[in-house]
Length: 405
Image (cartoon, rainbow, N blue to C red; front, side, top):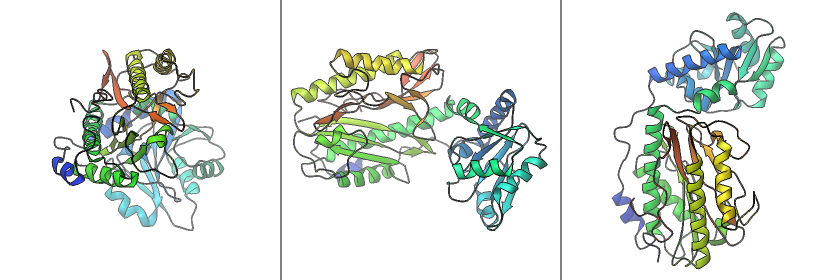
């Protein structure tokens, strides 16, 4: 029997967990102001007179404003100097002001009015001349970007990604600390979850435990997401429509995460309920070698894509692939992470972004044997001046996946 898998109960494991968020603090006003100033400096370099940030993670990152996207335009314009200027429905202004970190004027539109015409007025009143380039955050829905384009025919709208990406892809020490804690929280939840497994347990039951355990360690919303797969289901990276209950000898794949002051964890563990077969052991060991190969290939100044190629080279040496062929790795090796679970840059062989200090990535070169089983070991690392550093240590072995945790 795999050590640490099974033999306990949900009640016993929840009793062992406690709030792990002590000593952490949310991003403060000074850091938001610093981010805004960096964005404004890059806007000058890029020749962008203004940037529109839509509700979501970009608005959150640069202004501290937490607001979910909807069918109504809510966002902020930032200019090369000065404070952000917000736009929102009039009836939302009182609520929106309660969520402000960086303060700025709020321009309101009534339900019968056009927010894009109001946007044109805001830009004009702030000295934006005909022919000026205006950046739009890449997460902006088409109906908003199209509305802006139609309302401002004399302006040139372009992607704001050169600014948003350049600011967000290299994390501060504060961001790294929050992400470290979030991942430590999820690792503790993974260990507890493995212990409650029993023959016949369903993916739904495990999912409910993941939520309860994440709340116990200090994530009020529970799991940010969860994927629970047993046996042949584990061969499909993002799950199946109908889930099978757990049986002896099944590969277990659990992928989950939480938030710590809005920064996200994302971690996968794969292990066997029962005694691993020779083939399960072979694939698991190959997966771990590929995960470590990607990590070791990550060096300051090296292409992001080279880490992906290193993982694939390792897999091919073990008889998988080549390329995206299965049995093998059908997707990229890893992704960036921060306020969003998937951020730039990416560990795929076409990404030429040079690795730089503060960049964060998953390493998860999953091996898929469709219809049989899959193995994904997902841990995250960040770049330092001396190379990559794990946020949390990878799974130890197929026999003792949580040794040392």
